[in-house]
Image 1 (tube, rainbow, N blue to C red):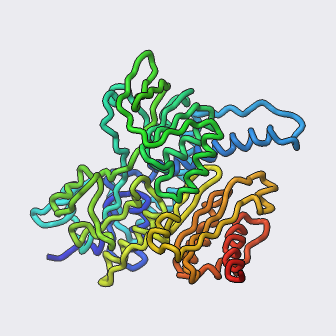
Image 2: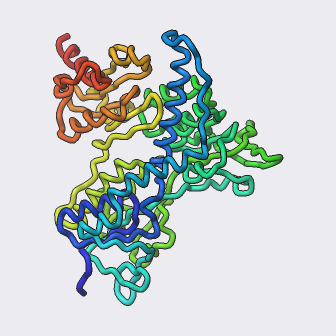
Length: 458
């Protein structure tokens, strides 16, 4: 049976748009079905990034007031919370103009701004408003929604999620954040800096469950130093509401707050897509796929950028491009997640890729060498009073890079330099030979890698 397209992408998410553009570069016949997802929709990652910047500005003001370099203290700035949402929407609008439907259409992409579902009859395909889209391959690029835990009393008491946070008329005085994600950690620090009293109830045994233990412990110490109350391994047993307050109970403890924010696992929002019709199987709130991003239907691929506990825009972009190549060409490429950097929007920021120290020792035993340098050795760290942090490189004795973990100012910016070394399979000597401006925080990479040379000379 003839087909209309080489690739139909389902979901107008950022990953879906990037996949469509990438496929169009190969002169493929591409359709993008938005599934009702507006290009102007505010992604959670942008919301968190925007308000994290506001939190950083508030903290910077407080730091300047504590410095002996300033003679007079001015009144602390007051955040106009109701102006935050229009500001974030303006940012999203400016970015979306680059990928507007009109701009995508000029690339030859067929934009279908409607919702549809898979079907088997009258012929296999994706049915949108009575129109059957037939394609050689399909790519799922779903939006996500919060997995709401079945906590007794939670629905009756009410709660917020990152997606609804900006709808609040004002920030609550006290807030309990319940979750297991990186977003929970980021929002805890940011909202504490903006004047909330935050209690962070993490369901995991480690604050940043996917990061190196040293990284997680330092970020936790920073949050606690700023006044965030952190609880780990929490299983909330009940939520009650009375007199405009909410009571959260776990174990033998309870907490009364103004509001609750759920920053829980994100799951693909595909309930109306009729995946069962095309034998795409789901498990544990996700969609089964292999290392080549094929679902249980070999002609249907997926890109979502989802780790066990968080969503990652850069991971989604990586998966989008890899899935497009695998969908369009005979040769199939497997995923290599060790080369993907991850980061937090905290201060100091944390960034990492590859194996943690624990994972490396489990796999390679005594063949592992740990290189580490503190941020305070950098002139820029001293000038900016950003002394908290370290760079930790994990290598084999032959110099093979296994993992990199950085906590410190601008860590998310220069982890990309280390990622290139991983992607090109360079060894530690390449980072030791790296030349960067001495005024850059990125100099910590070279300082840490240079430890390898000193170990070799012993």
